[in-house]
Image: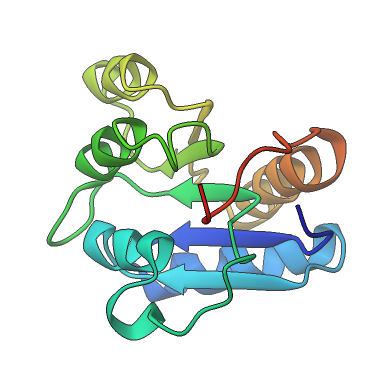
Length: 151
């Protein structure tokens, strides 16, 4: 696996996407944050289809940050699809959402999410939460060395 760190941020709210990107940049320098607006576009990215047909094969994300309430394909449906695909089933996924519904938390963990984080409403708390998530998944956690698009 490449040393390159890539975050796939699946977020349809441009304000939250921008805040997340800036918060990740503050935690440490990253090579790349890919922002997609829905679950279908996220699948295109992972599969190298559509607008992502020419992406490098090594661009497997280090972690996927996933909102739940998305157009086209919801976060939970996206999670269901990738957990059923042997190429992507072990990719780390962190749900970052405003949902406080217990059923969403239970469904996320039932489908194999690695972590569930509620988006704080306060800007500084939001920033601190994203910095913590980024620091852990990008610099503390040891990724699965077998993850690759070429499987």
